[in-house]
Amino acid sequence: MRKYLIVGCVVLLAAYTMPVWAADSVAETVPPDHWAYDAVQKLVDAGIIIGYPKTNDFKGDRALTRYEFAMAISRLMDWPGLKGDAGPKGPQGDPGQAGAPGQKGDRGDPGPKGETGAAGAKGETGPPGPKVSDDEVRAICAKLLDEFKKELADLQDKQDELAEDVDELDKRIAAVEEAMKRPKVTGWVDYRIGLAGDLWDNAEFDALTAKIGIEGQVTDALKGKVSLKMVDDVTRVAALPFSPRAGAGAPHPLTGLFDNIWLDEANLTFSTDWWTQANWAVGRQYFCHGLGLIANDDRRAIQGVHMSAPELWGSDLSLDVMVGMADYDDGIALGATNDGYGAARLAFNQPKWGIAGNWLATGAAQEEAWSGDMWANVFDRKIAFEYAQLLQRMDGTRPPSANQPVSWMGTAEVLKAGDLQIRGLVSHTTADYNVYYSTLNPYWEVIDYNSDLSGIYVPWERWLRSPLIFPGLQLVGAIVDFDVWNWPVEVRYANVDGFDIPGGCPVSNVIGVTTTKKIVDGLNLNLTYAREMLHEGTPADDIDLVQAAAVVEF
Image (cartoon, rainbow, N blue to C red; front, side, top):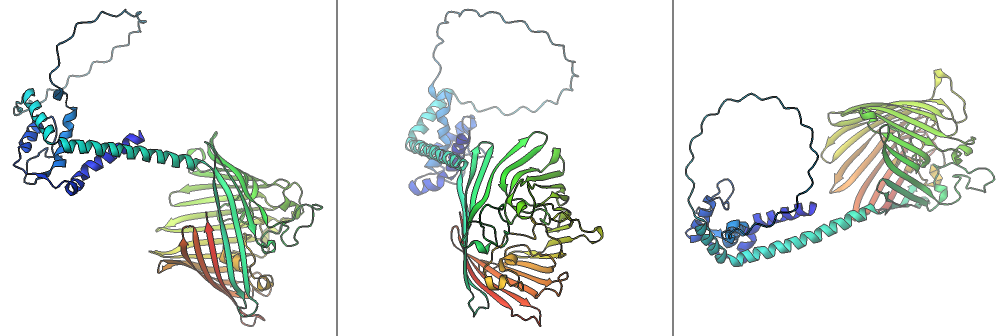
């Protein structure tokens, strides 16, 4: 069916544009006083062919090209009368053998008799139709077909060529659709080089991170994904402080990793329609609830079963549940054995707003927490907010109800004007709030060993590439996006207040500017300048970052 639709559209397009290419290749036109105008008009009046839309007329002051005439009279090829009168009726054949009588069906009940409607008004008698004999029509057709036989042959050749092109196009589309079903290689390479810290004193660095995987259809109903992640120096991955079980060897003391390559994702995804429409992911995977204050495994994918029902029983409610991580190395590193993980989210969504409740039943080790979040679209501006409380720490102790650790975070689109977009943000977290798998513990890498591990400065990639939220700090800032000569620019700024850190936070403000330039398809060059400013009187200097990054995506 698709092929015939394509053929029809192409032929119609060719017919509509025919005078253009015909006028270029054949300069001849048929003047309005040519005999073909009157001949074709007779066929139009007889209803055998039609002229131009709306008027059904071929008469006028504009001369038609011979190809326009050929396109119009090409319909004559299908006129039954062109083949002449039917011959005499042949003798009747012998009757066939009668079939067995079918079973008589039950007689249905008679339907009610409808009311007789009023007779309509008698219409006016129309004008008599043109009296054109079949012989006269055949003579006109034969003369027209002979006059335009070359153009008709050209039209047939063009139509045959278009049909061949469409067949070839259909085969190519089928091949592309088949290729899209097969698994494909995906991933990226991120290489950074530059100066960080005191730019004039041993500040050079470089860092390489890569991810490669394969994903695609396993069956018609099942998709799969497997990917590996690699860093050039395992000691840089400070966001992964997990350790394997005791006696398994000697991992790196900072990260617990044995090697700089690890399994990043490995999962199968599918959909079901049992008790409600739901999407499932089974295996090692990433997920996030709301803004992620109690459930976000960005630091490292965890293993489990993830179920998402976007329209619970066809309602405005959505349910999202993640369970897994049994006997996981993170839990063992935190002092738990046979540790499990369970988090759930129930949301009520409307076209322009929504609210949700999130519950962390058991996190890494024995964590327990709850949060509520909301989002809205106000005057085409998106806002989001989440408030969370930690009910039980990783070691199983429960803080007093009057002094429970809390965290909250809000974001809002302040301005959208062409290429300029400003997003405001604010976050507030007490020092004793720490959920292992949450937005407060994202994945980040150390690029400046001297300053990032000193405890005075904020790690560069922790605030340049991750949400601006930290335990013990309150941050107020903005992210501004705009274009300069077709170069996208992002400015990230935050004022830092160590309201819940003894002695305060040495850093007062952070600012970073990143611009991106596409080099070729799949390769972008990012240039970054950033600065961390300390409070006056701090026995340390402000530090800077100058970085170039080449990012390849495939």
